[in-house]
Each structure stands twice: as C-alpha cells, then as structure tokens.
Length: 196
Image (cartoon, rainbow, N blue to C red; front, side, top):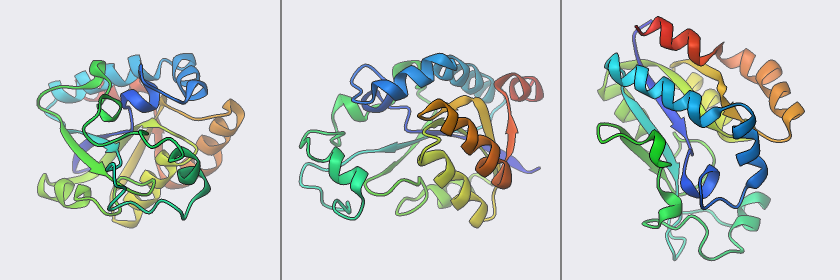
C-alpha cells in the first residue's frame, strides 16, 4: 500500500469548535462522534509513526491571496470581515486533535487542501502514496480532497465515522454515491486495528 498519512480537513475552532458559525455542522459532528473518533484515529496514527497533517483554511485581513468573489458560499462567509482570519483563534486546530509533532498545510482560497498549497510536495517528501481523510465537510472539503488526491495519484481512504456534512441524508448520499467511487471507506475501529 505504501506509506500512509492522515489528512485532517478543517477541524478548526472557527469551523467545528468553540468559535464556529456553523452550528448545524457542529451538531452533525456530535451525532457521529467525529471529534472523538478523529482523536482516537490520530492517536493510533501517531503511535504507528503515521504522519498527521491538519489541512486548514484562513484568510488574510486584506484577503490577499484569496479569490473572494467567485463562489456564492465564500461571498456569504466574507460578509463578516473577521471570518477565519490568519493568526486568530478561529483558525486554530481544535485542541483535542492537535499534537506538537503534527504538520499543518494552510490554504487561503478554494475548498481543496491541495490547490495552491505545498501539501502534495509535503506528502511526496514523506514518501506517502496513500492518504486517510477525516474532518469536514462531506458537502465540499472531503469530496474535493478525495478527488484531487486521486488525480495526483494517491490512494484514498475516507473514515466514515470521522467525517460529517449537512443535511444528514445528503452527507450519507455523498459517502455512498460519490466517495465510494473515489476512495475506500473504513471506520475508525478498522484503521486503529490495522495500525496496531
């Protein structure tokens, strides 16, 4: 299978943590124990020597480096001039998932962790050929991650109980009808057991 890395998508304080503006997404994460399952998965990965990379998003206050008017969702978010600013608490990874040995790949535009970042080069420098995806959301980020990773030649596994999206029926449909075409699906327990 080659070397594996875990990619944690946007599990940030301003997305699913104490500073969120997305309560429905927080509720979806709570219903599926996404934070607990992700923490368990990351602990197992670290113990097995598997790199953990937090794929985060933020904006500069002047919005430099970000496309801000090409997507209705981004236009809506940025009506709040303080949304997810670089260097603020909202852009931080939620504390229960952070470890000093983890890496971070920050992006300033778009919805995929690969475009406009050094993530691909970081993975290749680590000898990674397969990625395990966790986080949010099944609406945009996880499908974008999976599609771009496949396009770049990586094998992808999506952790079904460590991802969330809204509404619930749509998120389950994405896992069944989109993610299944791009990636292997596994549970936290499956991966934790395989990494022992």
